[in-house]
View 1 (tube, rainbow, N blue to C red):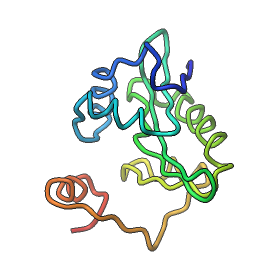
View 2 (cartoon, rainbow, N blue to C red):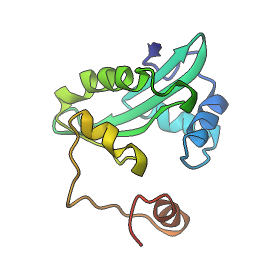
View 3 (tube, helix red, strand yellow):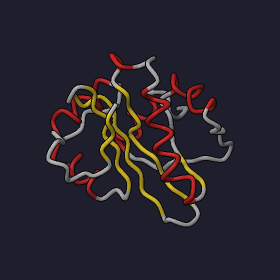
Length: 144
């Protein structure tokens, strides 16, 4: 896998990225809004195999105490080949020096992150309204 860490790379096809995120089970994203989110993130990762976008993640950080990692995805067709571990190694090399790293995981991926040293929070909370709250409940991120 070749990793790119810049969101203004001419290789980023925002529609393909939106499709990758949706295939991973996250909500459908508008490509223009997605581009804005990635361009406002301090850290971005795009993974390519044979020129095909197959992995992504992005993060924001205060660069001192904490970072929030989001949308960590490896296309299902490429899972089980070590790409997730390779992506997470690159992510942690960038974020661990910035303090704690927060992520909320798809319920079926929790064990993957635990193997990498992540621990579940007993006091984590989230605020959301309307359809955003409903999606979180439907996907199993929060209890009803």
